[in-house]
Image 1 (cartoon, rainbow, N blue to C red):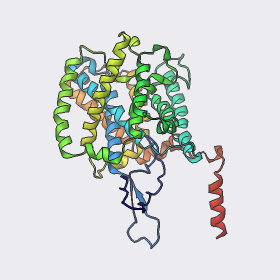
Image 2 (image 1 turned 120 degrees about the vertical axis):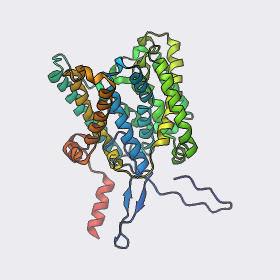
Image 3 (image 1 turned 30 degrees about the vertical axis):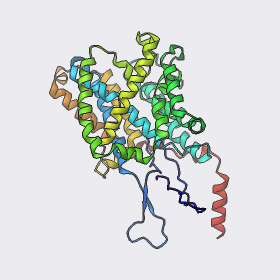
Image 4 (image 1 turned 90 degrees about the vertical axis):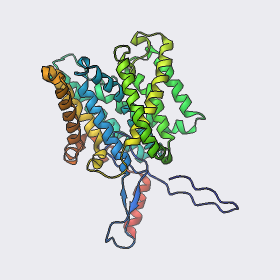
Length: 394
């Protein structure tokens, strides 16, 4: 996918074929970039080759969603374990940035073409509406909060990411035309970190503070991912991750971990405004380094879990009900769960749960809510209709 060098003279190398866009991450849809096409064995001459997913990105998405689930499972346990809280802090510093960078990478081809807008609505907007409603009703029933309102303007729990992805992707054409997109995104994020007036509507604090990672992904190329997957980077990442754990262990009693969530301004965290600028920039640096370490260890080959990378949206949204149920019904009140053996069992259970939720049977059951076709809601594209008529006339 790298650009070909232009030879000397008047002859130019042919342009690469146009690529269709792929949805963001977490996403149930197959990415249509960074893939190879292979004709199936025994296929007839002239048959259209089948598209293959890039195992690296599917592996990265699956491993990241497992870390998300583990982090949520650690929340009720970390208060009594300094080591677990340090591990929680390190994981939270890079697992969402990694997701968001890949989301930006697979949004590079997005524009306002009708078919892409349709996919944005069916793959992001509709799941947001349905799951925001479902989470609110679940909170009323399981949590006993009869005052819990269903508000599409105030994302609850995990649904903030869908709002963010919708806004980020709609602004993709803008980031492609501005002169300095990444510095501009960082400036917007820094302004958000010192602006408590933004409020909770659409979780704009998170949308803006995580924006630089999405914009960074928009301008990444395959060779950038190849760069961090070199053997020397992989080896260097081991002491870097060890140092991050040591720093996290030291920082646990000295630092508010809410900084890592990027959902509040500095003033809302009880810090002066300038601390928002300093902390946000420092955390961006830490997040990028640890994300590079994470990518360095993501395998390139196909494994048993690679196919699960296509179902990360299912695992992401569905595991939230189990996490909230454990909170409402006191599953973590048992003392033995707060011991090392219990913490390990909870970690394994969280990984197993989200793995099951990413499988194809679960996808088939919940596809109506995350991948609805909704042909009835959209006008048919005139070019598509013309192609069908031409094909019928042949």
